[in-house]
Image (tube, rainbow, N blue to C red; front, top):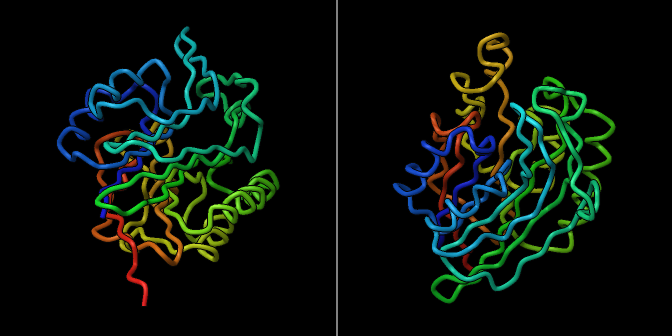
Length: 249
């Protein structure tokens, strides 16, 4: 069994909270979305090894440009790492502007996977930061990217899939994902956005109460247990849980 945390860290805004949270939790594997490349040394010091990192976008905010992407950190050596793009190809890093919704999707979108071994068992972890839409409404862009993501995941066979899916549970896109994989977030959680921290929590607070947009999905060979959301860490809640392999009958 391995312990897992998945979290959209919102770039560098919450380092003073995220780092103590991870120090306390001591997870085996961590999937971070919106991870700033410049912050990697801080996390590397915590885990003792560099991450598997891929660039998504260069964001301009408060007169400063930062490259951000997805990083997977592990307390165990990576046996295998792989990235496949369903939007963009990684040869360039698109530029976006903070708080400008017209640029939110100017990013490489991809599935990053790693295999790690603990106690003689190999675990395959996949993570993504899926295509954004206003107010979580489905779009043709999301539908196209989702089908491309499914094709990528078919090649991985059995895995755990965590990340920020930018699509609320109960909606079209999230439902299509649950048609393929098991949703491990307990049903009593209605949102994964931290209403007290999220940028929309002041002006559009009422829109956030039903936005379960982060996910922890598993295929048949995996089981997630003790899954919970931890708020007060970033503008998204941290998804935490334990991952084990199902016994072969």
